[in-house]
Amino acid sequence: MPPAMTSSLKPARHQSLVGARLRKHADYQRAYAAARKRQSASMSWFLAPQTMQSAGPRVGLTVGKVIGKAHERNRIKRRMREALRRHVDLLSTGFDLILHPRRSVLTVEFAKLEAEVVRILEQASVDAARLGQNSSSRPASASSAS
Image (cartoon, rainbow, N blue to C red; front, side):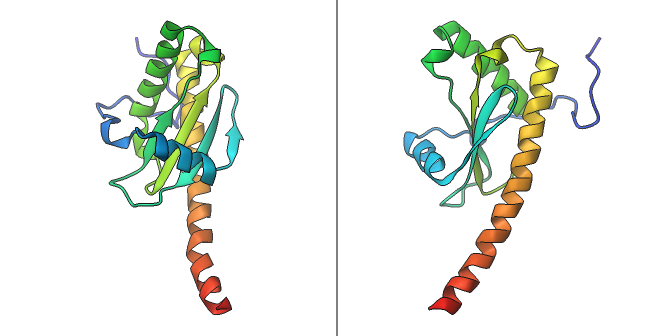
């Protein structure tokens, strides 16, 4: 029997994160430099606008050695990727999102983890819309100042 789903959680789809993942170290460094660290119950996250327009939004995961042994870090990443895969359509186009899960992600119930990932993606969407409005108004004021 499938677990009860809340209204904001959608049933699992067969989507992939292949094109939506951050892979290069330089992309991570650029995102860290351009973003502000935000916190949630079991992870911290960074949202940064992309410098070059890619095919769509991208997401990155980092799980440091301080979290645990390799098999624990890998399990955390697998759980996070699955939650993200189910809701990748909530990511805002033109932005990179990096997630830093805490050790509690290893033991938290998957439905709760999924709900938190959805909350983060929705908050990132709101922040992206606000950042998009600020960046679109910035060039006009910059050109009038010159």
